[in-house]
Length: 131
Length: 289
Image 1 (spheres, rainbow over the protein chains, first blue to last red):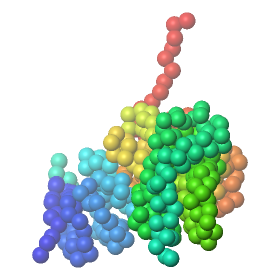
Image 2: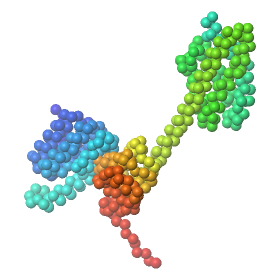
Image 3: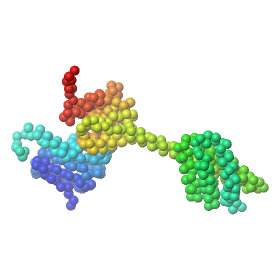
């Protein structure tokens, strides 16, 4: 079955969506990602949707659901590289993805994740950070 | 005798083409003295000749009831072209339609000469020709209007593009000075050009300056919020600046919530916030004198 790969980058997970999402694929991703977060104890998830050109309300909702689920599992989510057409579509659909952090590029997404991990790391005592 | 109906005035036109054309030319020049300034005589002559040619061709095909049929497509095309060029040359709709209507007199004169002994045939031919020419005249006026409308549409589009420039203020800071009322179509253009520019320049902050927006009602506010949300989804932050006191009052009275958006009174304040967020600072350098 078709799956979207989830890559591990240190304490973050990277999901790159390069194909057009259909509903089954989105559900699979949701399951895979939540499992992976709890398995690896990841602190952040970056979803790169620069290859995504078509969205519908289901995919839009899925993105905010993934973000909420990741938050419950104590990981920050950042969505990067949204295409202008996708942004306009989501707004017209009335989905503002409240609570989902966004960034223009992967670079800035990583920066945001590191910053938020650092911020939270101060309050936490475990030494899971690599360096 | 139905055969006469289909050949009728078309045949006569064909037979007397040169005579009718010269009569018509005289008619046109006496009716529209102003035309001489706007159109060259040779061009007008060519149009007249083409017009007569097309009528002859169409009547030979046997279709004389209305000009929407396939036999008249050549004539419709010609009239469309004439109307469009007349509109550009600065003719009034009346003058454009008169081009067609003035053809009646020379044609009817010839018809009368031909059918002087058959009043019934004469009446029928006159009626058919008159109906057709009326239709052509109306068609001309319609085409004239259409070409004018297309000019207006084009201008509107150009204005739309002119009125929504996206300016790069600083590294990673864009500004969008909005002028005039925001309607759905404009918001769409604004949003598209802003988002495109955000991607192209990799900007983090966009300042929407609404100093030039005369009124903000719920619709305009809705459009602003849409633009801000779309920019946020792309990963850029928006600041709305240039909010006048009256507009602030209106926004509150209308119950519009702008709590998720940074708002500033002036563009200068917004620039300051933007620079602060991107990690820049403007300081005054102490001068020597």
